[in-house]
Length: 584
Image 1 (cartoon, rainbow, N blue to C red):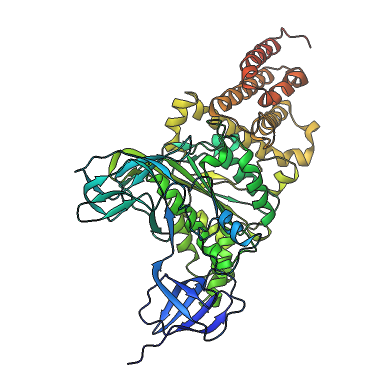
Image 2: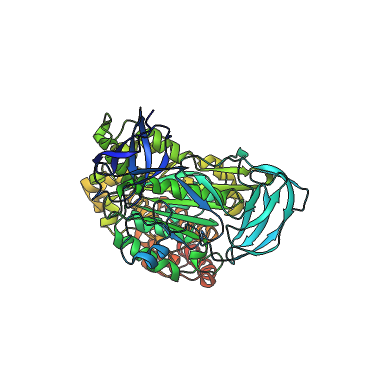
């Protein structure tokens, strides 16, 4: 029987058909053509397979060879990930630049982790210890902030026969099990398979972002999922980058999935210069960037978010809090649609494949807060925050709707707020949160005992403004009663003095939770006192003293050392004003 050599029999963009593929398996990695382009088997019919090529296919010809590797699309995990910039299939861009220059060469192959750099390995188990997948055998100081735990790969178990101490590369043996199994500081993992954990935990701890509108009204839980849909110009990327800088996470994985090259260039230029507000160290020491810009191959874009979340799961297994910033899921879905059309699959709504919702749900389900496998006293979390770019700002399109069904936090960005220069442009009427009750205990304990009561009062004021807005348009502000005008002014103070926040202001760009409690308490104190005075007959003009109102609104810009004194002063001024002792 003649065994046919795998060869290309058809080409349609990034989708390549190959004959003679008997014996291959789904998602097997291949090398296509004479330039050995990286590809992945995505369909098998008899001895013919369809290969998704992760590079530009121009120049491939019918009859070009196809090489099977016997491996799955995997990432290499180990020391050296933090501070690195990878493409969608985890090729380090710095190494690609050294070899190829400004543009990546076809068929480029470079080590995913630096195989020359030595790391100081400190063992944490002794000879004779029983170890299994997820157990920590030693540590490496990856950065000044992160201690990297070297874990036994999942699926491996045994008794430690020998273990070393000293400096090693990621590919050198640091321990050996009885039976000859060698352990290094590097492991591989299939990006499409979630890494196992011991047990999923309740989502009752928030991941703080330093953005008041999010942390106060719509906080995302550690291990939760949040989506940020918004049209062009509403500030999705800026909001994601701001959260990346200030989120209470140990590790941030930022996935630029199909974004414009200039935005990623700005990100790569800015991040190395930024200081982490939580520890004063360079922000890149806790950041991994996965850059797949819009001019890179579309097939690699589909893989990029899986690459990012697999890296985040690896750090979760160490007992760390990781957050994945996917910018944007819409570009990922467009890549999925293009590949589906090349496969001539039955299209669903707006041409997206019928399995779009299932793929999105499977991706979001990889978020969570877990007990670490093999270490019951440690917990880790992966939080997913995904930007969505609906065409024309239409939130009824399939990607937004499919995401809404599987996420717990929804931050809707609004054109109107963006045009008013109100940022973050999060629409507090359309956004929602499903886990507020579970997070209430944490906020009442760590922010202020009456935190949830203040949130309810804030929502009530904003809701009342919405009810009065149409009346104000019909009859005008001057024709409204003083109580209604006071309610509208109260909502304006919350919007301008609390929800509005500058991403570039040296003080206001980041607001910790204790500071948020002080600011919101001050504003609500004035609103309650002023509303009571108006109800008791005080003229509205005597209550809304411009000096006091503007001082309250601008309190958010004061440095921390001045805020407490100014808050006390303003409360005293409010009491004097509303008791009739202030000069008018």
